[in-house]
Length: 407
Image (cartoon, rainbow, N blue to C red):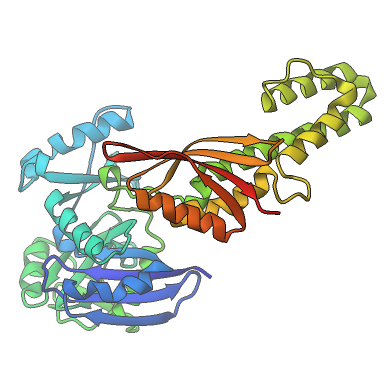
């Protein structure tokens, strides 16, 4: 079962950092704790490697806005929104990052643009902390947006000498507990009726301003983790979007080439079976077989339907699909681990001599040591290796290998 690592960070280097591990679909914590400051983030590096990291940021650094922007194009609306807010912003538009959210469900207003505004500098600082700790972060969420949403209610949570308040579906704020009463009075002075307030931790408020409903206490970060899973918004978008990293085994061109050849050959075999079963469509299937065969083997000038099965079996044998240990696919399987262990050495071209059962590689590397290391690994894999001439071309060393199976 996939596990998540939630990390709540503050704005300053010295702010404590809370962390929590949960399993998807479960409501209980697996582990939790608190770090003294950002310099201790590396203590979470190992925990982060096998889990999805979800960061909860201090909502005091974020301002949420909902506005009506003329236009039908989503791109045009997003481009215009920062300048419509310019007079309300504390800094220049160029120094701020605007992250956009979808229209919240059940929103009754005319607003068509919902955005979170934060300083580029602050995001860069946070991402630097995690980069230094070798922790990959793909999602960030302001803490108050992870609080439960209750219609016509404010929801509050006390954590780390701060009070988080979610006042609407796309609105919230954070105040220090020492000035919370003053802030509440300023916000609610003109309100005729007491504000409905649902609290998830004990806080002191003016009872003339609020009608309080106290909920059972629980670990603050666990409550935020539950709310995080219901919130689709992610602050890391646009230039901060983290792209998925594919593993070297998947992107390795040798494996891609092998899979592509196998797929084409299997497709051709299926066409042959279809030919035998569908006599009424003989001509159509025949043309399909010829076309696919030429795609797989473009050097073939003439395709004889009567010998396609034999030709396919022959090609499969050449590519190592038979029991031989010296075919192309079998040799690629032995060569691939050496490429993975010597990342500085890169293939430039590949040729396979079916008669000699020999794989010929042209490669490049940044140093001569990579060639020797690669050769040793191939010999350990029971391969016979002949090294060609190696030439130094500036920062790149070029060379070649002729590789055969010892069996």
